[in-house]
Amino acid sequence: MRGEAVTTYLAGGSRLLQWADGRPLLRPVGYTHDGTRLSTGAPLVAVNTALEVDDQGQVNVEGFPSASVGGVGGHGDYAVSATRSPGGLSIVALLTEHKGRSTLVDHLSAPVSTPSHDVDVLVTERGAVDLRGLDRAERAAAIRALWNH
Image (cartoon, rainbow, N blue to C red; front, side, top):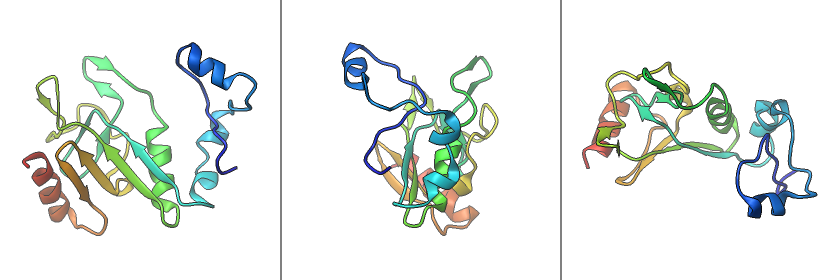
């Protein structure tokens, strides 16, 4: 179904709803997040964001001790599918700071949403780092260098 947009939900204004009217867009999460479907066929490039990452590339998208921001699923489903898709790529893009707080942390504020082995590339406003094939020490050095640019 390449080229056809599908989604589990829509959130937006009248322009989005007008565009969506009559289109067969809505599918159950079992379809939209199906790893087998996502990782076969055309290469999947997943671009996700994060609240914070650690120096191994582990990702938190769920929240902070004081507040939940997102739910479980989605991020991890697409990241793992992209890393398993032949020619695919799992990208996490985020700012290096949010409200004066670094998004690179020593310890995540919430459980790991996406493990480091399902993150191929980190992108910030300072550049990007390809983590594929790096050992733990090399990953840490590359990620810290991206934040210290």
